[in-house]
Length: 545
Ligand code: AMP
Image 1 (cartoon, rainbow, N blue to C red):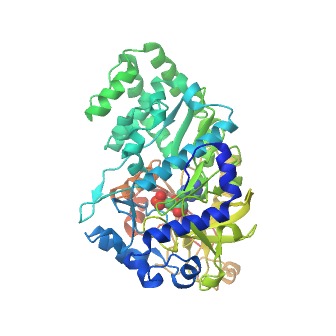
Image 2: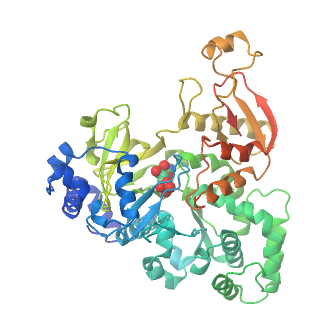
Image 3: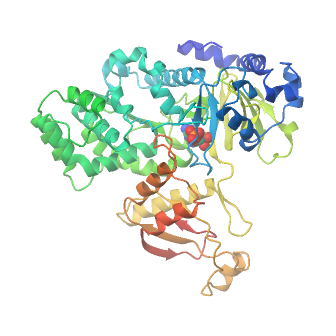
């Protein structure tokens, strides 16, 4: 596998996707043929046809016992021919339960490759080179790791990346491409880390050309923190001293060296901007050279588009990459595309990816290779990676939107199982997002309220109330489904929800507000903060807004 970094290589890669995918599969099967898992199906062979015929398409729960055996101390070759040196933890906020996936340094290398490639594409479109002309305010965090019973580290993919030697020794480090020193990213206390990112970003405000985070939610969350801390941040900049509660020494020392003494003029300017009653355009007012915000804005993140546009005076939002704990998929070749038009071009040299057409769940013969997907059709990717997943369904639904050379481009549509269902009917993630887009428009036009977050819950604990009118009862399956109930919650409730999920082992960099709440504990977090309640007589579900 070649991981060279040149835009010309991208053309070679995407023009030879079929051959590259076949080579990747051969390499993976040769590496893993003698694992306990593959031996059962391939008896040591690395033949593609045999792989397609004998290796079953599985879900995570089918391979969980094998993964857990390695986590509990058995040898890597139960499932992987290469060494398993750590585990990646998925966020669990998209699909419910957290999962762990085997990995090693190769994953980190691929992640660096994907990021660097997408940076090249983005720089080309903005005719700019961040390293030469400015800095990224990178809002990145790690979360304290846990270990498996056998002592292997478990953390999120991004935390693994930021803690790796690959990141520590990256060539771009000498250009200080981020406003924050690495010690801020690596600070294990999330509150100290957020505060210090803001402090470093503000004290170098004239250098910031990009605001960058994994997901849109992380940027919104940083602005929420800024609303809480701006006076204290200004006072730190004015005096040149970092607040005493920043107790992580490495973080504190590195940030002090960025402050470089008192700067009352800068503190005045920031204080003036933050004192406005409205925070409209706060990002561009505080960081006037910022050209774009870089964060994933597709799928569940679309709900944050209006908020980010409000805070940034509609700066372009560049949704650069699409990936998961199982596999890194692809990059957005058209960074200036509108959020709703974003597609990701799959990179054929990272994993072997097949596609199961939607609505053919039981029909494994309908699975096609990457280059054989059809324009406009919907698929779920099936991953075979270097680290022990073979033909594993990942639960995302994608639509083919075009081709870049031979390589398909996909729009992220939704998570597979994210549906509300009160009485057999299905309300999908896409339905909910469309409804919320309309609700946002209505709010925009008729009130001065702004939607900052939402989630839904299917309440099946009661029968619909008697107050429903007859047509509604008829139209909603003979009254079996109640009215949509909208509950307005206090400001900050969605931060509390995030804190709840993080306390359950999630990570802020991966966090996605669940569109549908399934746990009663999470529901309780919301129910404790309800300000107002409304009923619609039109929609067949219950929704917290
Ligand atoms: P995790 O394994 O916790 O990192 O979560 C991975 C999941 O996040 C993917 O399977 C997608 O559902 C979602 N995801 C990742 N990147 C994007 C993106 N660019 N757009 C929409 N959803 C994404």
